Image 1 (cartoon, rainbow, N blue to C red):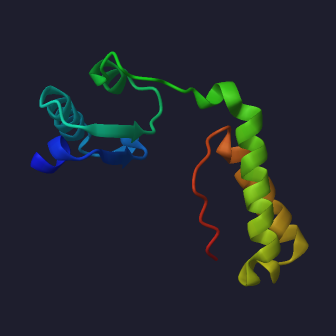
Image 2: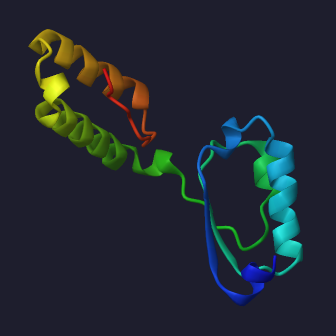
Length: 119
């Protein structure tokens, strides 16, 4: 903890709602707040009651649902670039590429995630 008091530490937790040991992680994060550690924290999560309750007053929430069109465009652009430039993906039949594009765009549902198109 000494390093957190002397320096600013940036901590990024992605998909907190999907962690198996979520209670332990939330407890750890609350402990950091109580120790007045100099930590800048960014977490991504679906809206879950236990996570919302554990967040302090200094929490800024950004709901991606409010930006769905922007996120959908980003996902479409990313998938399109990968399909156009990845040597393995470019070899796929156009119908398969279209299915990949349509499926990922539909299923992303406003959620910007790192999509691994490894085939």
